[in-house]
Length: 313
Image 1 (cartoon, rainbow, N blue to C red):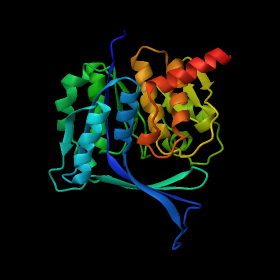
Image 2: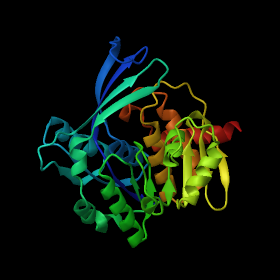
Image 3: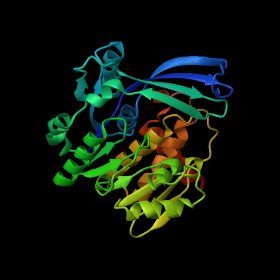
Image 4: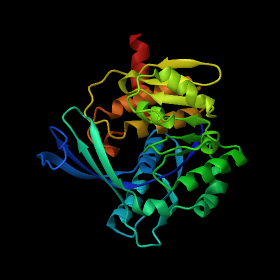
């Protein structure tokens, strides 16, 4: 049996308060909703759980409040078999992060977040993780904690020879200093355009966008394309890896599932193309269910799908 690979994840936790509505409200409008749920969320947490479900041993760092939501985090990670030794509690009386998620009848979402205690995760906390991160195959991060901490962690990875993967979400301006530390960058089509200073709906091709980001110093650029799969660009190739066709129910968390699944496959020694293919399947399966944690598939789900695909080919 192959040895379980270790993957590092540093990022955010937030309670996702989700409600479904036929249409999103416009300014000043009240619309009816249904199916309200308070669910575990936060991009870092989602990705840590997805990585664990894909079969990795996850070393996770983050910060939560001294409240009932924060208490629930430890119960969640115990259940998901995630190492919690680097989960910090707020020292400034801040609450655990919260996200308000609205999902329309087409499965599209709009999200408002207050990250609160997440911003208390510091450079010193990263330093505490270094000895454990040296045992990992890579470190995956996002942008829901302080930017200077993300940059510091990226530089530390370069220092110790650890692969650094950044999911640049939610979008914020990225410096070349950070981009040059990224072994892999996984933006969606909107984020990729914003990184270049373009409008989110700029008609420029995804291939051109990815190539320009690569020229900014990113070794490998992977632009996620929703149901169309993903685009992979580096020094040697520019290739589209198709996704799977499904009927979407809720797209919330699909990007997190993709990034984490890609990282685990990469950590297991798969080529980037093979890892993207597996990640496309994982993300595709995720959007067929409501919620985030509830929708994240397990390794066997992805393997079964891939095996069935080969059998039917």
